[in-house]
Image (tube, rainbow over all chains, first blue to last red; front, side, top):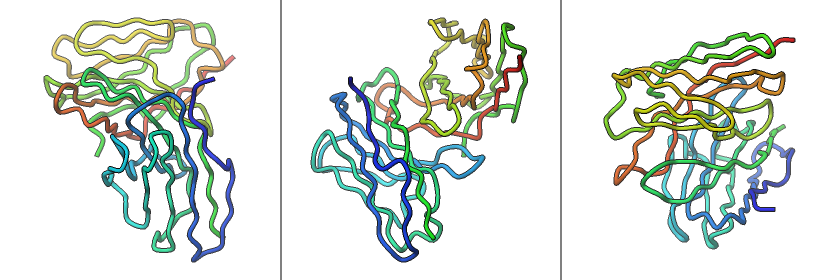
Length: 114
Length: 113
């Protein structure tokens, strides 16, 4: 089945450690996105990529880094510089079309920093 | 900041139509209206989008006012599985389309038996 996978579903880390969240898609989508969601809030864009080896900062990129070495993969690293990393992280992908923006989302990773 | 305004929460009786309003008074001529929903602890799901005509698909109907400053998402026969947060989003199309979506806080729809 085509879709987006994120792993792991739950992740626990100690404060000060970097952690990498995985996102893989087999939809042949060009664009991929990372969002952060805090309790009771909407999604906020961290980074997005429209093509391999290129990505742009979203609204809250500080303390995060990404790479896009393959079309299918867009891993997100939460660094120790992120002041409050505990959150629900969602990855999405879409085709690049001028006509509309249907994004397909993964199941999310819930990160807890102890 | 989100360019839309939605009520924080709404209730609906199971089997009845759920009408979710959205205000987007600053919408530009080259922006679509999108609706997504997020069931608890899952990723959001696309529902429908429109420009200026009313749209219908297997999930919902979208009614956009003639001046395009507001819209209503209609779930014709709400079920308990429709309980979710519903997001109304405006985003550009054409050469201005970057693929980015700005999610506000949405409307929490509670469908009750």
